[in-house]
Image (cartoon, rainbow, N blue to C red):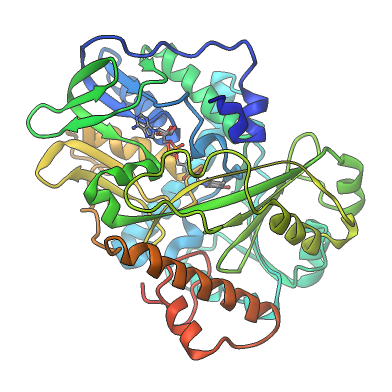
Length: 470
Ligand SMILES: Cc1cc2nc3c(=O)[nH]c(=O)nc-3n(C[C@H](O)[C@H](O)[C@H](O)COP(=O)(O)OP(=O)(O)OC[C@H]3O[C@@H](n4cnc5c(N)ncnc54)[C@H](O)[C@@H]3O)c2cc1C
């Protein structure tokens, strides 16, 4: 299947005549075998080679590098400051501040890396706006803002309605907080650039090479259709596809995120006043996120659960290709930007999100399999954080004892979600309740008690809300 169909970004970033890396055709050995060619796998590979240039690092990818979420996302490169409450709960205040600051530094470092390596990932550091599009969302950020302030950290500016409207080009926005450090990228161009950087450092990349089996005890062995890899360490950097492994299955649920993109219309954006690369998320539970592109398009996404949920422990291709809810996402774009009238999308797509209960990733080694490492659960916020994930996983793979291998997000995978069929049918109930909660907020109503109860089981999102059972 042509990976270009998985997003507008991939179409732009992979030239028609570009050759894939070879697939594995025989048995080999390596110091480290990374499974998954997205940001997590590629940053890990690059970090390993930067630290130990002679290390033999192999990366296998079932498709081509960037074909997963890394080539399909919204391109918001954000820090963890908006998730500070969850971070504080997991790691304690001091470590939460250190990691949030490190995640902000990662956003900057991605830009520096692209500049140094000549990667044209359309990197723009024009900030991120967390905006309210209904009354109930106004001030949803207060608890996050105040928690950071308790540690004398002030990553956000408060913006009133007039300023938000003028900068975002939409009067739907009633208020917001702005994080100047946020950046945006053309996500697939970043992934493909990292692939080049890894190859240039001597990482052996095998594309169209899926892991079919893992023997994880002792010296691990990865099986693929036409060859096996024996490695001292294996790094599972498979995002949602990692749910094929039982411990990862218990720690995340897989939900979709769906995006539409318009034709280029730079003059309209100029008229509306949305003149730079500022990215915007609203405060609903099934979040809306939107941005402009360098050629003047709007990409508009809706997070969380379009209803196509993988049952059991396989994601496969269920969340590949065009989204089935393009009309609904387009109508939200039109609602947010009524000035655009009946604007139609030029393209649409979807992709899987590895949602953890707290909305933050897990890093570590599988229980009883110390040489098999995981980095999973970014929960729709991975463009910036995968850079940090690469440092953490590289330190773990090198058995280093340092600020990354011992950081607060290195922890055992949680047993946070139930087995099937409860997960599937319970998930549908919770998803319905979340959608009704958002609709009630739009209508200025309070949802009924059962809806509130069920919505309370939602994993932590951007906006903390009353009754959430995190
Ligand atoms: C539609 C969408 C919008 C998003 N928007 C944003 C955003 O704006 N900002 C943000 O920060 N985050 C966003 N995210 C999340 C972000 O894209 C991810 O957190 C990030 O890309 C994760 O990178 P990764 O390397 O862990 O996973 P991936 O990029 O998914 O990489 C995993 C790779 O593993 C490969 N793989 C799977 N199974 C196997 C196997 N058996 N053998 C070999 N390889 C295998 C896959 O093909 C894939 O390439 C979004 C995600 C989606 C889907």
